[in-house]
Image (cartoon, rainbow, N blue to C red; front, side, top):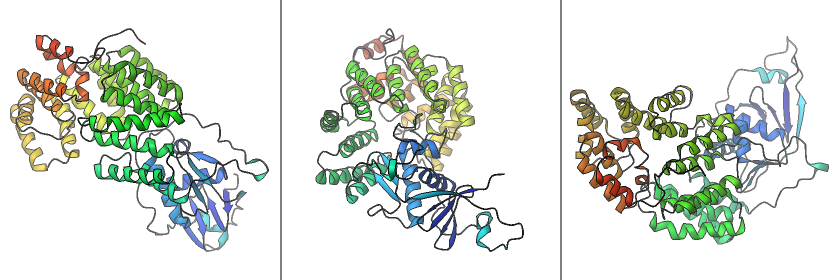
Length: 495
């Protein structure tokens, strides 16, 4: 058997097989993902390692967001005593990734003699004791974005002649502000999103053309609107549009900017063709980002282009089989009315992937339409709990369901004017959906008309969502569709 490998840098030794550091005469066992991060750094010192590559390297086959990586980096810095403002080990490359700074040697660790003393230096890698340093106890989590390609700039070869082709590092304060602000973008808490905006603005005071900050503010404003179901998107539309145009002027192939522009075109303007063009530009600019495909499939479903949406999903999966874990194919089957296929696809995800609200919502909706009330109710209870509903209220709804069934339960949800999102969006769309399930169609039409007046984004789906089938033979449904933008819900030739 080969001798185990270790990496030596500064006065530190790291054994990746054991996930152990020898630092200041102390043996430290790293959390697995932190050890994987250090291993990735040690293999490529002096090179720019992008966030997306690191996430794929550390969480292979899983979809995580950048928060998970940022947490791992912060933990590693704390163990090493490193500071982002004056880095000795890890330099943040704003908007890109990280660089491992110290010169690092890869050596083989001699195997200890069988009779070596237990406390000797030679045998420390094999010790099973864990140092309780109190720094590495939180589990890393998250889901969502990864890519299937290692960027061309990342190779296994060291810099030529020991020189690095790194771009100039931004000011330490700017780098820290950007990193802090970007970590908050995935939050659904308005106060954190507003704090993110404030930090991005601080960056712009020092560097007015900073693309990451411009795009960050635009993203934060859209996420703020998302917390209100995009009902207030007009408040942010002009500012977001100006920010995105400035980004695209300096970086015409910025895929994230194109995707946000498509989102703005669809949600704020209900402009179908401009949204389509922007989504296609995003895919063209970065064909390795699954978010571009996922957003585009949702757009195609809005147009009733089910075959095209399925083809795009298959294209995405062919690029990387790890992307089979997204729920979008379930939505393709669901919107097309293939409920059994939608159920099978969603059960596959539920049985083999980490728990997700999206999977629970899908199972709930499929259960309702298939008449599988127990399945629908089980998921509904879980969604109620996740929405923060008091247990006493959940128990009341459960008793009502057990005694009078699903129709009565949804009638009660409507009478209570429940505002929480329990898998049916927020009012007035949620109240329209409750009314449909309760068989109170006149009220459903009233709430759908109000959703159109408020330009609630999800109303664009009413002609393709099978939840609204009970309404389709009513002349008022055609009148509703006539108030939507041309193209929404219409079956068209595939583009």
